[in-house]
Image (cartoon, rainbow, N blue to C red; front, top):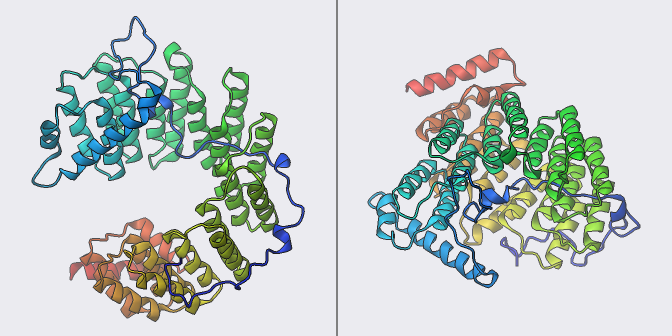
Length: 493
C-alpha cells in the first residue's frame, strides 16, 4: 500500500527487469566487502556493567551480576520497560531526580545506562549528569570505568568535549584507572569536535599513549575509530599507515574496519581508494554483509558508475543478505540525479513487489527524484498523496517539495507552499530557510527575501557567517553585503 493517492503510478503495471540487472555481472567473489559500521562501539562501552576479569590493583568493579543466557532477553525487556516508565514520568513539574527517587528500589546500574542512551538521543546531556550524580549517592554504586566510558561517549556525540574531558578527570579522581574502552570513548569524543585536524592530532596522541600502557593497549575498535576518522578527512597516507600498523600487530581487522573506511572513501567520491580497501578485505577472507553492499551501491551511485552499482545490486539479490530500504532509497536518488527516471521508477516498483513498505524517506527520495528529472507535477502528486494519508507530516517532507520547486526555478510556488506550511502544524527548520534563502537570492526576489528574513527572526533562526557564505558563494561580495545588511535591518525592526 502506498501512502499517496491511488492515481500515482510511477511504473508500468508489469515489471520488466532490464538486461543490466539480469545479465552476467560482477560476481561477489570479485568484490569482497566488509567494514566498520558507523555506529560500531567497543563492547565494553556498549555493555559496561558486565563483569571484568579481576585485577588486584583496580578499585573499580562491575556492579552487574552474571546472567544465564535464557534470562537475558527477559531482563533486557524489563529494564527497557522501566526506563520507558521513568521517562514518561518526567516533565517540568516532575524533575528526573524526583522520579528516580520514586523508583529508587527498582533502579540499578543497567537502567542508568539505558537512561544515558535515551537522554543522549534527545539531546538532554545535562540530565545524563543528573543521573550520574544520583547514581553516586546510591548504596549499590561502585565507581566503574563503564559509567565514565558511556558518559564520555554521550558528551562527545553532543559536542561537549570539555565535559568529556572533565569526566575523564573525574574518573581518575574516583580511583578508577583508565582502560582501552575509556580511551576509545575519549578519542571518539574528540573526533566529534568541529576542528577535525586538531581532533585527529589529539586522537593520534592518545593512540600513541595507549600503546605504552598495558591495560590501555589499542584494540580493533581503536583502529576502527581512527581509520574512519582519517578516511573521512581524506588523509589516505595516514589510513595506509594505520592499516600497516594493524597488519603488524596481533589484532585482526573485522568487518567494521573495512566497512567504515570504505564508507568514508565512498561518500568522499574516492572510488579507487574504496576499491583498494575492498581488495584488502578479500585478502583477509572477510565476507560482505548488508552494510557492505549498501555502501558500495551508494558510492557507485553517487559517482554515477551505474554499471558497477547495478552489478553489486544483482550480487546482493543472489547473496544470503537482503536489500534494505536504504538500498532502494539510494538507487532511486542517484538515478534521479542522473535524470534516469525510468530506472528509478523500476527500482521503486521492484521494491514494492518484493514486499517492502515504502517509508517516509523513500517517498521523499521519490519527490526529489522527480524534481531532478524536471517532473514537478509528479513530485507534487507524491507529496499530495502523503499529505492525504493522514500520517504526521514531517518538515523534511515539506523541505523535499520546496527543494523541487527551487531547483526548477519556481520560487513563487515555493513561497505558496511555505506560507501554507506555516499555517499548519509543521514548523520550518533551518534547512527550510536555507534552501529558500538560496532560491530567492538567485532569483533576485527581494520582497520574498525580505519577508523570509522577518520570519527567520520570528522563529529564532539566527544565520551565522557560514549560512550566508553557503547561500551566496556564487553571487559575489557586493550581493552578499547587501543581503547581510538586509538581514540586519530586518532584525532591528
